[in-house]
Length: 174
Image (cartoon, rainbow, N blue to C red; front, side):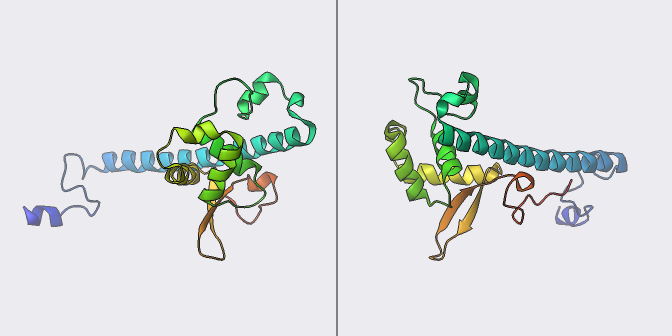
């Protein structure tokens, strides 16, 4: 059986049915490329959404939430309903409104100041915040930076085409 594994086509397919068919390989290659392109597009769209939200939040901070419609308040997670915002939304808002990269502990402290009940539902809030911040990096909404002390901090990603972060843009070139 070992010889069958080593004589495969190099793609790790282990001589599965259709694996040597050039048509199957071409369809898989095309699907793979399309998936990669769609994921790049999603990351770019998430960054642009973040930039627009950040702009709206900045304007609301300057002029007050009353300049925002009910729908817009909801879209930027500032609706003042009785319902507490979600944990991920709270982390997003803290990063969006921050003027510098924040460590997980700082994000926890900001959430504690703004919406303490959100943290009460978590056994280890610091670990939960770290998990959410890392997910935001995966989604393309935040980036990790290393501070002078070697510790990680997170920063909201603004769309480089529409902000001052021109040197730190998306890695994709569409």
